[in-house]
Image (cartoon, rainbow, N blue to C red; front, side, top):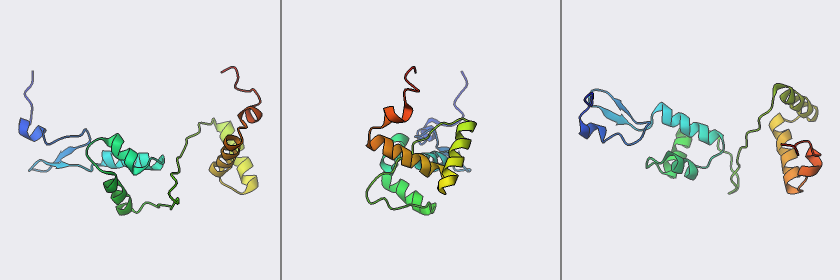
Length: 138
């Protein structure tokens, strides 16, 4: 068994897996690049600050995450109290190419093309009509 390289009292200061010790005084860096990247990834997926704070589970509050968003100057579009969630869609290269071509004909981005289709299909319960039994065997 190898001895712990740091005294136990210093190890107790590290409370989260993203914490790092820096400098001669062994200060604990709380907002490391790993934590910032994790928050940015979750933010990009549309996860709200309250949920990010719950996922991190290291004592950071939702207000702190929103403050970091402001400091990072992220473009925050007002949603009128609605939370917009991003849903990833996996497509093979051929499907992505078709999507891009069809969206280009309408002069809209591919993401907007899929968003409009999804809104119409979900709100009018058109799953069966849109898929036409194509995925029934799965």
